[in-house]
Structure formats: C-alpha cells, structure tokens
Amino acid sequence: MIPQCETLECLEHIEEIAALDGVDGILIGPYDLSIAMGKPGQFEAADVKQALARVLMACKVAGKMCIIFAGSSEAANKYFADGFDSVAISLDTAVYINAYRDIVANIFMLDENE
Image 1 (cartoon, rainbow, N blue to C red):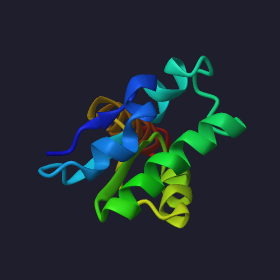
Image 2: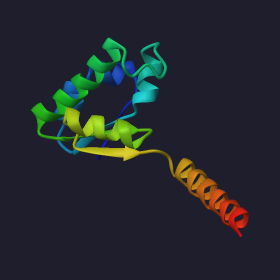
Image 3: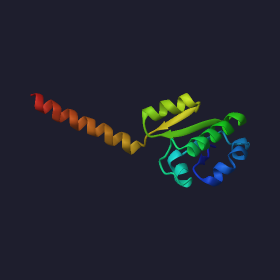
C-alpha cells in the first residue's frame, strides 16, 4: 500500500504513517500539498521544500520508498538528485497531448518541405 501525502493532516502525522506495517511507501502530490499549505505551486518556497524533505526523511527512517509527482523531466531529475526513490512524471493526458502536437507539427513541417 502506498498512501498519498497531499494534506496538512497527513504531513503532521507522516512519521507515524510511514512507520505503519503494510505501508510500502509514500507518494507525495506536491501540488496538492502546496495548496493545502496555502502556497499553490510554490515548490521552491522554504516551507514547501521543508515539507517534502520531511516526508522523504520519514520514509528513509522507516525504510520505505518515497515517490513524488513531477510535471517535467527537469523536476524529475531534481527529485532524484534529492534522494527520492521514484518519480511519476506528468499526466497521461498531457503526454498524449504533447505527442499529438509533435505529430501534427511534423506533418505540417513535412508538407511545407515538399
């Protein structure tokens, strides 16, 4: 079981939650957590960074995986460098939209070159 940490209540009890038998790790939803902290999307704010570090440390101490969502490959690389075990990158819909944009752009580029 991998519960998500996206609320202040979860953050306040993260050490207890991470230590529970049956919990294999924690998945952080940083955007939702930042909203709960009153700092939507402000991932570089000191208290948001401290919250993410707290969850990561609770997982490390408990010997559990710590997973985080990232909206870009750049953010994913940063999270891996910070010590996160796994990173969920983007949303499936965003990946599909970007892939089809590239396909359509390439079709029109090919058409212009002919």
